Length: 228
Image (cartoon, rainbow, N blue to C red):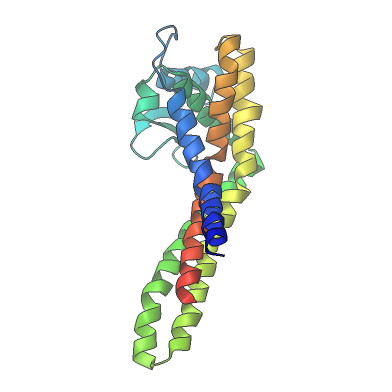
C-alpha cells in the first residue's frame, strides 16, 4: 500500500508540475540566438503593431513576464524576448500582439478574461483576509468551528483563481493558433523548417495559464489537507 501511495503521489506531482516544466523547457529550448533573424522580439512586436495599425499600442520590456495589458494598451515582453533574436522571442512577440489584435477587434473572449482576472484578484485578497482572521477568531471566540468555516470560505475564494486560469485557455489558444501562427506562416516571417518549433513555443504560451491553474490546485490541496 505504501508503494501505491508513493506512486500515486508521484503521478499527482507529475500531473501538476509536468506542464510547468514542459512550458519552461520548450521556451528555453528555442531561445538560442539566431543570427539569421533580421530583428529581435521587441522589433517584431513593434513591426506587427504598425502592420496591423494598432493605434495607441506600445511595446516595452518588463520584469513581470510576457503579457498584453489591455488597460494600458501595452505589449510587454520579458527582457530576454524583447532584446533577443530567437524563435522563442519572435513567437512570443507574435502571441502577445495576438492579444492586442483581440482587443483591437473587440473580441469578447479577451474582455471576459479581463473581467474574470479582476474578479480573481479581488477574491485572492479576500481569501488572504479569511486565512489571517480564521485562527484569530477561533482564539477570541473559542470556537474552532468558526476557524474551519472561514478557512473553507477562503479555500473557495482561492478556487476562483484556478477556475479563471482554465476559462482563459480559449483566449490563449486563439492568440497562439488563430492569430500568431497564421501571421508567422503567411507573412513569411519564418522559414518552413522553423514553423514546427514556433508551433511548440506558441503551444507553451497558450498553456501557461493551465500550468498555473494546476499549481493552484496543489495549493488548494495543501489547505484542504491542513484542515483535515
